[in-house]
Figure 1 (cartoon, rainbow, N blue to C red):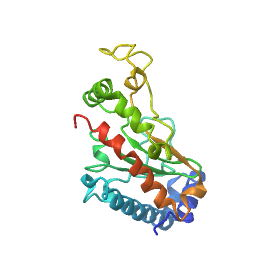
Figure 2: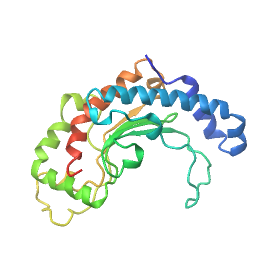
Figure 3: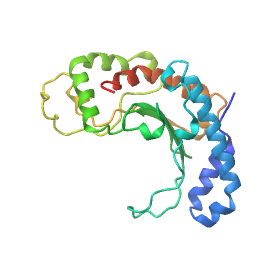
Figure 4: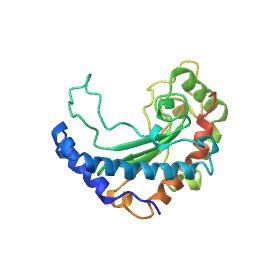
Length: 221
């Protein structure tokens, strides 16, 4: 079964300590090996997701994996490279992250996690999600409290408004969910879990448990 190599985490750990272009150039072969390992893993995950979410059929890992180069134009942190590998598996690839919910995998020494859902959806989509929660909030609560979902996730993460959005009563029974600006399941991972031979089963199991949430968030798309 495909797995994340220990050497992949070691490369990212070393990159954190030597985040400059010269070191990266001298270690490019290590980067390419680590990226290939991650890419093959992501493709295998996509192929498994297709079994329960066929809309991802034909999706390629290369359209889901984020570049390792950082955009440093508008930040005080001038580190050249990200110290993680991340992939958002969604119809159309990562460029569609603001249009559809999907499945996210983040590999970083000491900070790896499984996530997905919708991160700060644009206003029309967010309003559609809130309207659905207002009408079918019990369905969402049932999804995030299900045994399968709770096996991997403890609820939903994401920023939340301090006050109810316009048009929604503060007394609505699901107002705390309606106030959310993002809808993110999250499972934190240790380095040992990431390199465990069963990691593929953990990732795909978590994404399968996430599928009902993905369906709920697809409202209006």
